[in-house]
Image (cartoon, rainbow, N blue to C red; front, side, top):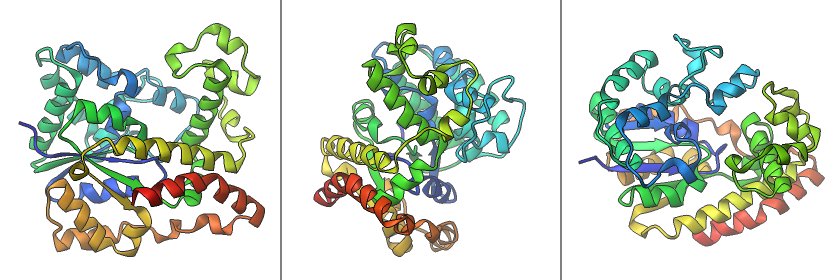
Length: 344
């Protein structure tokens, strides 16, 4: 039987990476960072039909993934931990999905852990993907001698309906940040600029996900969007794209609105919310609350170390924008801010 499982979900750019690092140093918590990114599209991550352990491992160890493509074309992100702990994989060989962020977060020898997991996972009998995930989580929990499991992926709020269906007993923490600050951070991040541009592609093509995109759709796209789908991706297409700052506020508000609606479908005892700013203001109180919700205590030594890992300098960044830009961004974020206030 798997131990207590908690998902920390959010829009991204909300302090969640720092929270994963804090959870990693807790003596009783297995901190899984960006595991959901290993599974790809949430709409197809949990098929109903069982698959064998070899097929499940093929999904996790796939080297020709979107992250490899970005890296090969010179697009790097702070979340990509493996290239900063180089091993036997490279942009030429491709890097396994689970090795980009999840395994290097757990160990300084991600290649060794990958091999260790492969030997066991490939022998597993057929079962559903959620059952495979539970078995993997439990395997890692025991391997690192932890007591509970906390998975945290930054861009994960849209996963909530799929996760609740796949793991009905799991708990959910919604980590959020002041809307204008979060949206401003998104506008300066390659991954979220790509998400914005991808949404533009979907809107123009009239589709909902990448698997629906055809050559006919691509031919009808403007060059700055079609170029994002070419084998060789020019990073300048991401950074030079004319993306109004307020449009990131709109994107953030839409994510928050949909996410809060999905979280409302989960029993109240299985969900909680916490603001990044509240963690900065009262780290001992909020981190103790988070640990208790995940099924753990908050040792004094852990809280002491956690306080050194928080960066208060990320607070209030939007306040330094020119007044017209700040006003437009605040207006775009207003629906999301109202939804957060109502949910609280």
